Image (tube, rainbow, N blue to C red; front, top):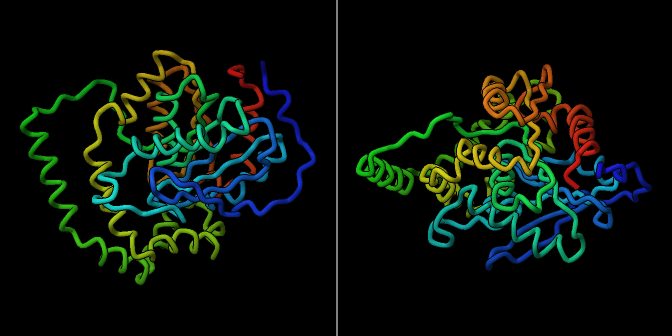
Length: 318
């Protein structure tokens, strides 16, 4: 049935970023929730370098519409643990997907049996897509804004010896690359603000709160080791954790509807990639937002919230 129940309800004001901590395999994970008593569970998944706080202009909107709005700091980001290679081995969308799956099982399920909506920005979209393939019977829909990763219509086979050499080179490179110095410099030379200026089309959305939520995790002493685990993990991912494969798998069942929301001024992941996905996978819905960049949910929250809510309201997967 359609989620006609997801109407505006009386909702007390909450601190949307109030930190809760959950032990996941010995790692401290930070998460927040608004409207936890509501019926429809949503998990908001942030992009690379961001945190749960990046959904500052979204979670309250959905909480007022009978949605239990969870925002989660993926491991390595925000206020969650920042393990390195020795502690976790690698960090990639397979690991983050496992984190989300266990979060659903251990945190959400004791209070809410409903199908879960996953809303992601960039890297968070890739994690959401990974979860949709792994947990398709528990996921109502994925809203990806935008979806990163290279998209290939045909499988590309690398010779085993070439792949082995490439993988070894990447491991050695990232182990010895001075990421500690690199992160120190980007915080001191204003690189973070420069990056935000490139990501956001509307520059007035770049406020001190945004700069702070991006900068603080980078200043933690464990950030470099965690970034190293991400660089190695994402570079050496198996094919089955790449977007092309995941989309093919999801396309085969079509059990999880997928909405793409893309800014036509996205400098990081150009719109042509979204059009390519929607053209090749005709069951995917693409919504284009004019004069918006890479982080539509924060740059144009009213537009993003409306498009997402209308999609959720009309779902038939519940």
